[in-house]
Every structure is written in C-alpha cells, then in structure tokens.
Length: 172
Image (cartoon, rainbow, N blue to C red; front, side):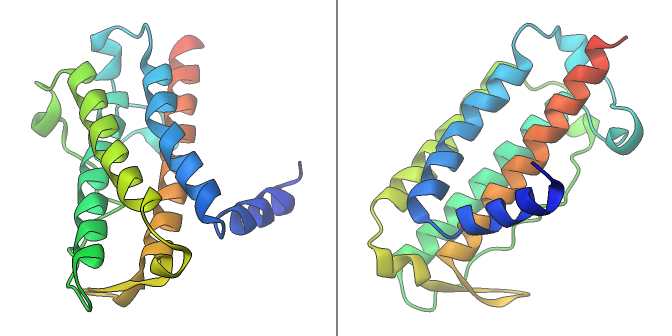
C-alpha cells in the first residue's frame, strides 16, 4: 500500500471508537511479542541511527509511563466536567539509569495493566461521551477521542520502532 494510502487509512481508522479500542487493546501483546526471547543485555543496548537514544527496555518503560498518564487523563475527564488533565509527554526519552534495574517482564505487565484499565474506561463510553473534554495545561480543551487517537498513533510509532530495533539486532 503506498504511503499516502496508509496515512489516509490511519486517519479514517482513528475516527472509529471500536477500531481504536481494538487497536489499543492489541498493543501490549504486540510489544510483548517483540521482546520474546531477547536476552536482557540486548534489551539495554542502545539502538542505531534514528533509535540511538533508545533501548528496547527504554521503549517499553516509555510506553508504560505514557499509558499510566493517559489513564489518569481519561479518568479525570470521565469523573467531571471541565476536569483538568495532566500533561503526558509523548516525546520523553527515559534515561537508562532510571530504568536499568527494572525487570522487563514487570514493565510489560505494568503496561498491559494500565492499558487494560484504559480500555475498560473506553469500553464504557457512549458514543457521545467520546467527545467529552478535559482541560490540558498547555493545549486547552482536549476530547477523549483526540487522546485515544494520539495513543493509537503513539503505539504505532513505538511498535514500529521496537520492530526496527529487533530487526537491527537480528541482522548483526
């Protein structure tokens, strides 16, 4: 599929709540699959090229931390009108010294836990509630639909990144 068609598909798919829930639900399993059988020392190795600031474990830690923030945003919006929602930095690259002692299975389990709870919140929404908004400290009013689309795109970016990094390791 040509690039422009893929971009259009992502835009259209990102407008359907049931598609978003399904895609978000599958991300934790996909990430776990990328990690399967990789020795710990390789999970901590820096990537190459555009991934040189990352390690595979760093990708998982980042996805877990972003998901924990996304869940807080969802819960805040669902719990009240004009709720203030916390900022979640989708571009934050974790520092190795902050996660090198973390267990990779535990990080993946935590990401799955947060994602499952985010999906429970999304599953319970009526079609109209997807447009419910919270107040972001920098962006102003942001809807649940917008946040879910951002998480979907964020997942795609980092799942492709993990795949690229695993393929680079296998090519050695």
